Image (cartoon, rainbow, N blue to C red):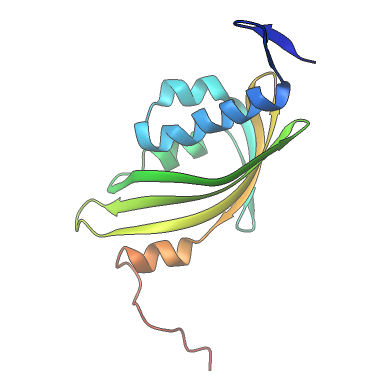
Length: 144
């Protein structure tokens, strides 16, 4: 299902899906909610950390989190197959009130339809993020 674009360059569905996911991830830096709306379905299904929610308002809220700014993003690996894109990444965050910065790693999988993200699953190192931003003590947890 290749389509012609430009000077004879074939663009595959997987390549288009990768670009959609890259655009979505970039919104965490740009905070561009209009672009988010272009690439994420209104009724997107989101799974992770033992929860399941539906609706674009959830990623909108994550992108617009007051007091927390994404400074940088590194896509370590991105892989597309059929209607799925899998990403491993690291984002550098700043806690605006203190200036503390830290890096959070994450692994996400997206399913796309019609050029939009319709489902995604993932996990991220929330504990490491909170420790790195000084919101949890920087000491080992004692499980005794």
